[in-house]
Structures are given as C-alpha cells and as structure tokens.
Amino acid sequence: MSWVLGVDSGGSGVRAALAEAGDLAGPRADAGPPVREYAATANSREPVRTGDAGIDVAHMLEQLVPMARDLLERAGAGPLSAVVIGAAGMGTLGGRLRAELPAALESALGVRRLGLAADAVTAYAGALGCRPGAVAAAGTGMIALGTDLAVWRRADGWGHLLGDCGSGAWIGRAGLEAALRAHDGRRGGSTVLLERMESVLGAAPELPGIVYPRSDRPAVLAAFAPEVARCADHDPVAAGILARAAGHIAEAAAAVCPSADEAPDGCEVALTGGLLKLGEPLLRPLRAELAEQLPHARQVPADGDPLFGALRLAAALAAGDLRLPVHPTLLHVPDGTRQTHRKIQPDKKGQTALHRPLPEQP
Image 1 (tube, rainbow, N blue to C red):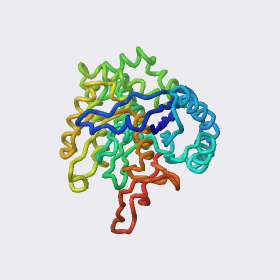
Image 2: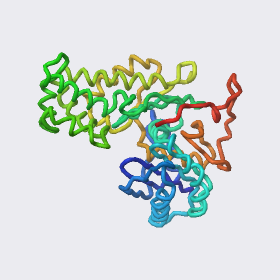
Image 3: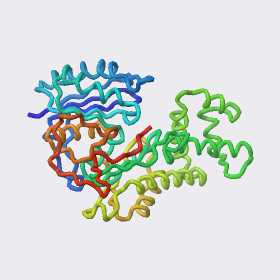
Image 4: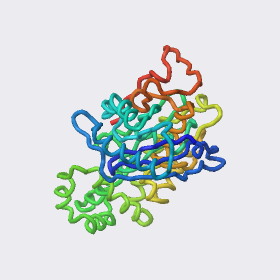
C-alpha cells in the first residue's frame, strides 16, 4: 500500500489526514467524487506562527512531525510515499519552508516526495482535481485560481483593503455601510440592516471603536455577512449587496478560467469556502452570474475541501503523475521529487509552465 499525508495549515490551526493513495484515484466528478474515507485524521487548533522571516519552520515541524507519527501509528501504516502541505501565506511567507522543510521531513519521517502549496492550490485540487477550469474560494477573503494544466492564473486575493471583492469581509462592510447610511439619513441606506447592526454590534456611534482597533478586522466585518443574507429576502438593499458580491466572484472566476480554445474538451468551474454557507440568497445570483460570464464552462460542485486537495496532490506525487502545473511559490516540488512523464511544451517565448512568472499571493 502507498500511504500519503495531506496537511492544511491556516489561520484556525493545522489539519492533517492520512490516506491510502489508491482511495484518492477516483472517477471524474461527473461520475461521482472519489472515496474520501481517511485512515486517520488529526487537528491542532494552534496556527503556525509567522514572523519577519515568514512562516516559522520550527513551529511547523513541532506540530507536524508528532502529528504524522501518531497518524501512522493509529492507522498501522507503513512509510509515507508522499506529503503535500498546503499553507495560507505560502506565496509570500513560505521561503524558509521551501528551503528547510524538505531536508527536515526527510530526516524526521523519511519523506522523499514533498509538495508545498498555497492554500488556493489545495482548494483547487480539492474541488476539481487535475481537470482544467476555475475555482473561486470565498470565505472571509476571496481568490480565484484557474488553469489549463499548463499555467496558473489568479485573480483577486488582495486582502480586504485592496480587494477580496465579494468576500465575507466585503459583504459585511457593505452591509455596515448601508446601516450607517440609514443612521445618517443618506441615500442607499437600509433601516433593516441598521436594526440588525445595533442588535449584534451596538449603536452606530460605537461602531468605529468596535471595528478599527481590532487586529482581526476582516473577520469582524465578515461576521456581519450572515446578517446581510438573513435580510436579503425582505430588504432590497441587502439583496443588492449580495447580487453585487455574486458579480464580483463570477468576474474573478471568469478572469482565470481557460477559454474554449485553451480547453477544447471543456472546463469546469467550482465554488468552495465558508461563504457558501450563506445559502440561496448568495448562491442564486451567483449561479446566474457564472452562467452569464462563463457560458463555455460547466458549473460543478466541489469534490472536497483543501485538505482533500492536499491528499490528492500527494497521491499524484506518489504515482509520479502530478498534472497540475508546478510553480516556484504556488506549487513547489523540490528537486528530486519524481514528476509526471507528460512533456511540457515551451511557449512562444521559450518558457515552460515551470518557469512562467506569476504574481505572488498575499
């Protein structure tokens, strides 16, 4: 048996799952998703620290190595064939991880095949596997990632001050602004949202003191997004906010989705992330926007979450058949890891998918 480990490291902690690689090689989503019965799972609620040098390698190892050993022991599993770690901030904060983690994990766990991925990449792999298309990952923030299996494209993910349009933070802020407009007597306000704001957060004059000093302002703003969704059925202002959010998310997906020429056999678009829990008030306009902006792509449900995506990538590494494009920061595979035998053709500038530049993620 070939055992693989997937890791999802983010703001809420570290999750890991152990699986037999063969369980992850399921059929295409249109024939049903692959089996997702993990041999063992573990969860740490302590996020890996970050500092001036980026993601803390020692803290990652301190959590990951005992977790992996415990999973292997509980499952009665043999050596690990491959490990993929998906981490928030990998694009800009993962330099030391890429430099130091391969040797450290080989020494501690005997791992020879390792992938280090941005969390948007594991979200893509969890949703669509190795199929061409686009995935919009919407939660507190929002980023879209797409590929034709030759290069990656990304849109948004610029944070709540510069972007993340349509995200939970964006919706929450728009809802609070509409509430404050109603408080002031300005056009575009919503007395319904003002009432909800005062009920869950406090009076309007108190709001700046509640929001601005917080270091987790995006999460504070996003916490009001469910209130906007609850009001959408009977408040046109709230419904309009969700309609604009749907347009923004679809725009990002359209910006990264392969064209009909780039994916002549067709491509898919999937949605993932906690924002989908807002339900039909958001999903209804979002489905309509995707159909209008991406008429050549088929909307499909996500096969699984980013942890499942990390396991899928690890299984591909173990089989030497990684079909998603590697990239220096988005999907890093250290030298020596066996790759797919698929020949990668250079473009007109002589660059391959391994070397084409792509803006780093924040």
